[in-house]
Length: 142
Image (cartoon, rainbow, N blue to C red; front, side, top):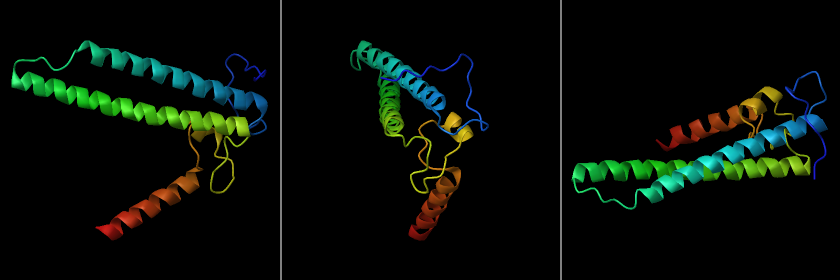
């Protein structure tokens, strides 16, 4: 169990030691709050889908609209499930002492990138290399 506390209004800074205990706890709490928000939203969505009680619309256009809405909601739920998995992986990296470091280069990912994308596993440079490689491979297939 973590005993590190994060001061009120704390924001990680480039001036402090990278991934010190307070910074790690800050990101751990950020990830846990994000996961909690997603789970709440997902539960709400699930209840809405259940409350619709099947597609009982007599008009075919109305039924098609409802089916489209349900398909979109299910796709969103799948995205949320995948994001929760990434959050859990980030929390595991915190526990292992690997959080905040690039999977490819072991270099710090950077505070600004982690603030924007707390589940990031690659530095900006490594991410850009991956995207260039994907574009090159996609272009070769076309």
